[in-house]
Each structure stands twice: as structure tokens, then as C-alpha cells.
Image (tube, rainbow over the protein chains, first blue to last red):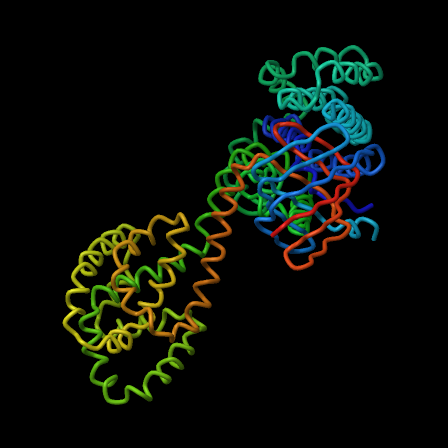
Length: 106
Length: 403
């Protein structure tokens, strides 16, 4: 199953990466094993988002920058507004990084 | 709130990951269940510190995890943070007796096959801040990760090299990026600017004789001449010009320090130059003699002011007056292309620099992105948003942006 490493940049991914880094640094963990954990995280995270998350969000804002490179869209929004069922959040500047969903199904 | 839903899902992800790597930890001489629990404990702790996991949920999940693991893990879970140093060092020794022996050897190792290892694993960490742009590209990162593994090959080697790499990696990584070739390019440019600036008078004389004669023909020819150096960068023509006037030898040996000095010197020259140029009635000659230099500065001026590169700024600051004289001239066609390329990168860098400060990030997959005039619409799915210090997950998202 194809996965994205994209989500490693999320909070949960960063925390895992830091943890693995620490443990590899002090010799508790071998780099390969750490790598395997990361790969497993890619899978688990992608799967969880796909199957367990149901919420919808709408995003509006001023598009400051757009970029499409290597099948990755990057948007930088200004004065963006996020709405989901429960809340609304306003953000002065937000970056969106999106991989092509079709790549996963291939 | 959304955060509790997020927290639940994060917990599930953690459990899923831990469950599925358990085999790897226990079998094949893996570090064992204890280390696995430690990993989970640290991970959850960090998430709680980040305010993403709510405490109680984590604990319950942790307990679930602990049940199969037995009692021992409980200690690890409770200890993790303070315990790391005391606890792990002995563990490491027990598990990997060779480690202490090899520690001294680590320094030489990283140089060769090792370098990729730390770099990859750590990229996400420092990278999250610095290399975010690099990280955007999944292709790149995905290729990065596999490489080390294959390189690593024997586990023993890796273990040996492990600690040192990881210590070292951050600095090489950090250093690798900024210096790049970009600086070299600028250095060259700078040198030439210096040369050009300082020896401008000579240059002018040199060219005026030939330039005045064929002015009409010469300009296009010169453009061609400027074209040829494209291989070497537009700058070449400038350096040729200066070669004739001797400074070239000097410039070759210029070190960074010298450059700075030169820059200062040239600046002082530059200050005089406008005076020298002033009396010369024909701006055309100026342009002929040092077209590239002027163009370079001209283009550079606009962009560098935005960019944060310190050195070029100095130079530019000193030359604006000269540049303004040549605004009308348009043989820049070739040069600007090259420099724009660089500058774009530079601007990107700056942009990213700004993005660094942006704590708000959305990671997702896109289904569709369309644009009608300045209205962009996109549908995203399976996303993680980190906004206003909260993590929000979504299954679907629709975006409408105005460019």
C-alpha cells in the first residue's frame, strides 16, 4: 500500500519523529527500526484519516501563493477562515500542503 | 470539541503503530517490548506536551497497551522522561555491547555511507522548520528514506555509527542547505561586480575605442557575445572585460575575507564612479563597457533588497545611483534570465522563511484543484490541520480561494 510521508509533519508525526530521534541517539533503537516505525506511522495515519475521520471542513481565504510541484499542491492563504460542524477558526496566514490522492489508489 | 475527536484518533493511531511494529521489536533480536513501551510513552508524552492529546485518554490507552506487555512496561511509561538518561544508557549497553567500543570509530564513519542516515531520519525534525519546502515534495523525501536503509545494510555497522551520525547530522544538514551553490554564484557575481566597479575607468577606455567606432553594429554583437557566455553565466563577459585590465589574477585568489575588503574598497570606488561617469556625456559608452555588471546590479538591486542575503545587499546599497543611469538600456534579455532564476530561489527562501513563522499548517490529499480566473476551488481529503495550536482532522474539505 502506498503511503505519504506527508503526515510526518503533523503534530503527531513530529512527536513520533522526535521520540525516535531521541531513542536512536541514545542507542536505544536502531535507525532501521526507527524507520520501520515511521513507515508504519505513515500507513496507520493514512488509514485512520481515511476510515475513522468523518468531519468536513470548508476553507475560504485569499490565495497568496500557489504552487504545484511534483504532484504536490502548496497553497498559502491569507486571512483564511475554517469552518467545520463545530467551530470556526480564523487564521492570518496558513499553508496547505496536499498530495495527489490518486497516487494512493494506484 | 474537535480536539477530543482528534485526540481519540491520535490515540488509535499510536496504538495501531505500536501494535504493528511490536513484532519487529520483539523478534529478530529487536530491542524488546520494554523499548517499545518506552517509545509509546515518549511519543504520548510529547503529544500531551504539544497539547494535542488530552491526558486521560492517553492514560487509558496506555493502560490498555500495558496489559499485554505485563507489569514491567508500566515503570517505563511512568519514568520515560527523567529516566531516559539513567535508564537507557545501561539498556543500550546491554542490548548493544559493541556500542561503547565503536563510539570512537564513529567519527570517521559518518563521512561516507553514514551521512545519508542521520540526514534522513532527522530531516523531519529540523526540517520541519527549515526544510519545509523540501519536505513538501513526497517524492523527494520518500526516496531519501529508503536510501539510508539500503545503505545501512548490516545492522551492526549501523548500530556502530548510529549515535555519532545522529549527533552530527543536524549540523551538516543545516550547513548543506544555506551555503549551496547559490553563494558561489553570488560570489562570482560579487567578484565581478567588484572588479568591474573598481576598474571601471580602465574598462571604459578599453572599450570606448572599439565601441565608439561600430556603435551601431557593436551593440547587437555584444549581445551575442553576452549570449555565448551563457554556458558560464552571463557574468563571463564581464570577467573577460576585467581580465584585460589585470584584476583577474587578483580575483582568483580572493578569499572570503578579501572579498569583504574588496567589497568595501569597491564601494568606495563606486562612490566615486558616479562622479567619474558624470562628466562623460554618453551613457551608451558606460553601458557598452560594462553592460553585464550594470545589468547584474540592476536586477540584483530589486530582488536583493527583498532577499535577506547580507553580502549582496552591501554592494547593492552602494551602487543604486549607477544602476539608475542604465534603466533605459535593454540588452538585459539574457542576463536577467539567469539572475532571475537565482533570485526566484532566493525569494522562495524568503517566503519559506516567512512560512516558518506560520504555525498554521494543513496537510492533506487533494482530489481536485480548479481555477476560474482568479477563483480557485479545491477539494481535499484526509487532512490534518494544525490551526491556532489545535489539531483538527477532516475527511473532506472544500476550499475557495481568491487569488
